[in-house]
Length: 313
Length: 319
Ligand SMILES: Nc1ncnc2c1ncn2[C@@H]1O[C@H](COP(=O)(O)OP(=O)(O)O)[C@@H](O)[C@H]1O
Ligand SMILES: Nc1ncnc2c1ncn2[C@@H]1O[C@H](COP(=O)(O)OP(=O)(O)O)[C@@H](O)[C@H]1O
Ligand SMILES: [Mg+2]
Ligand SMILES: [Mg+2]
Image (tube, rainbow over all chains, first blue to last red; front, side, top):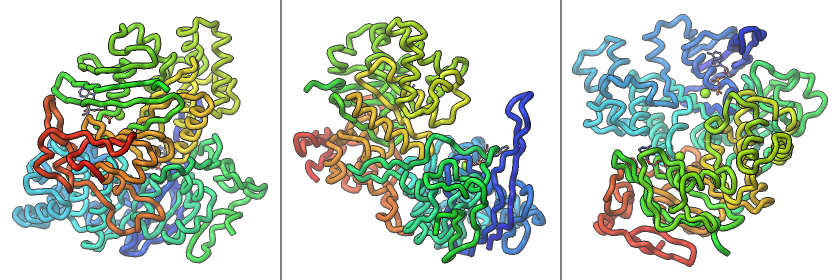
């Protein structure tokens, strides 16, 4: 369904007028594939390249090197309308991604209108059907985004993404701006829609508990690479990479009396314009040995899981 | 033991008719962490700003009691409260850049706090600043003193904010979502720091958060807010062992927990949205979202004492 082949995306940035040019290695040599019907959860700290990867998969931005194939086709060769029927995004902030001057029915109808394949009546039916599926009443169709709550806006964004019945949806932090009660509503909705419509999701989140709940495959991203990647259940049961373990330890479950863990990552913070040699995680790794500072860690899978770490035996 | 902070029946309204805080009562004891938890817009920040006398212009505040130690905050002149603020009662915010000035170095901003409140020399202030930066786990504090806020990562800035809040040895620290903008890894570090400082210094900590995980790991006491009211307050262990208000239970059910909630199964969720609450609102504001709603929920809602330190406001008087 999705094949990502040795994809890089670098940005050039200049921090001041006279300072030297720096290369931000947002996505730094990723290869993976995803089967139809799977949910790939991508987790990692802010700035590790999750959104950039999402945009590359959506074809919103060309890779610096490598290629992304969707159902065997390169996105670059597809035109916008073909792409829109195949893959759609849902972003974090529904407010900024919805046109404030359009009514809900226009927003959700726009992708259909752009395809130009349906009569006005059929288009209206498709919009109303989609609104019902995402749990919005008919009365909502005539509202403007400003008249909706955050959760309702995210439902509109989901309806717009699904109205063309794409095969794949890239959800980039779809619930991060929402309260937990609304987050639960949206996660349940996304799960139902996946079953009903046979969707494949790329689900990006910084919240590991959310990813555990929704994902069938998990990729732990650090400075532009998947440092651990494999089927969700075993990965959560026996995390192998020290970074995955640190992330898991940082999840504060609502269990009173349990102490706050010492995640042991120290004070240094990753900088994608200054990627360390050897294992890119070594400056923060509590277990690092000499070899980690110089050699590139292994990338071969074991039991269907890749763990880019010398010590993850 | 007397509370460091005592609030009884606090009400705050805004000119547009919003009743942001409705009859909030809470106490923070010396050396205790009291968490105020609730979803966005429920009045957590407005409650904190009321204590610090930092409400926006036009807000109307009233309270039967609002006392910091022996200071009656309801009667004190603004300039006297201003003198306490940053001194014996300090506050840190979600976004450190709201309180750090980008134009000045970390050292000069921290030293300035001590100059203002204690009239000590700049050199002494810088010594104290370096000492506290060390205490909040910043290596090479001397180097950091000369840096500007934008040169630091979000986590380091929040550590600087905490150090700055500690300059005058406060007895009460109010922290409003201090880790919400941070990565989970950094959040854990900052919370550990807050907890150890609180124990070392015997601070009374009023910690505001929307995250029940943070509450569970930090709080001795908890106030759960909904639509401007404290709907449940309890000792932290009691609250998690036997949450009584339907809102509290609903919130707990919404949170996915690795190893507990079954992947792929539906999460508990609370239907609907928070209603708009104006002046003179009567009845339970949660009733339209509540599975137990009954006709009585439209009337006056009783306050129930389930145990000496576990109270709810709900028509269902028990668990
Ligand atoms: N259009 C861009 N131009 C320059 N740098 C960018 C651009 N987009 C992202 N970056 C940089 O790439 C890195 C990864 O960003 P992003 O993919 O947004 O991370 P995440 O979504 O994991 O927080 C960051 O350092 C970010 O500043
Ligand atoms: N300056 C203001 N003017 C009008 N309403 C306000 C103002 N500040 C806050 N509010 C309202 O007061 C309520 C409580 O806000 P707040 O205390 O910031 O919530 P929380 O911190 O729990 O997210 C909200 O309904 C908010 O819209
Ligand atoms: Mg992002
Ligand atoms: Mg707030």
